[in-house]
Image 1 (cartoon, one colour):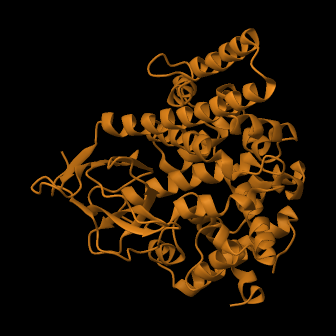
Image 2 (tube, each protein chain N blue to C red):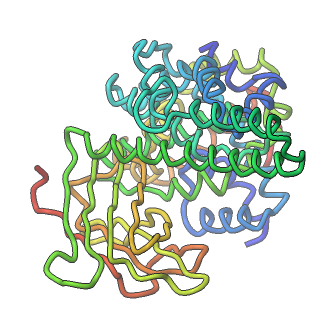
Length: 193
Length: 248
């Protein structure tokens, strides 16, 4: 779990790394991989559950970051969360595609949402809270934890979860909201609603 | 919908499970840089990103790092490597000094070469993606325009993991403020946008990276759209490549 936390809480040297990537410095890509490669791989593997496919998707993730690095603000950007979001999107996209499920416009999301990853590390909760994530997930009621895992790691819509779990859609929506609120409460993240 | 009505859906949006119309509304707010929604979704993304921390620890193979670096031309001998261009910049700098070229001229030359270096590196990355699709074991292909003498001709290659590669020639020049847009057309469903590109001297190569389901894809098409692209085709396609019934 630690590398993922490091990916989220990277220090200001990350900005210099972004600037070097934007100058097309391949050594910067090597450093980017050394910092985030294993975290991205662990995340993607959890989603696709196939080592070879996971490595292909991680390679694709880094290539996308390399080709789209101009979208990140070199003075305020947070490349770690952005990279991990791309990795998850690639993995979920593969999962949906291979299962013949509806795909979302992930390409649009990744390009349009890059500004969201600006100054993110400054607003992310402190690291001891991040270390409580797994414990917080474990403390969720089993059904609540399941919907979180199905949504995040399986990329399932609420309707798909309803079918898979044999529960009414309204029940699934309640579980999702309750689980997210519980996580917020556990993690002490600023409440948006 | 206003921001107050959308705030309950930021978490769902960050989790990619928000439903319409809220999903589209939030996207619209983000696209117009709505500060309230930007801040709300960003906070939600921070929480959602943390959920990934519950993934079990796993170690990739040692080869993965080398593969990734090779895919951008680093540690790669073929083609025009990045260091060759960098060496050229340094060499020309020395030459300019030797010949007494003015500082301004040197700056202009260096800037042009830096631009070329960036373009070459991007081209190498694009070619690497194209090569990965072409060489993929599960890649299938489809031709278009073969029976007609003048319209666009070429091939599309689809790899279930890598994405779609389109190679075309005889492409007419697009009108001003227009661009080509590729579409992946699922069987019985609406076309999915697959990237924008321009032709050069009637030729074009376009790569759309990402997983593609060969079993549910009926065709790949190209239309001419406004420069910003479109969510759905607005003109008749200039290219339609129907996939074979059974991928090879």
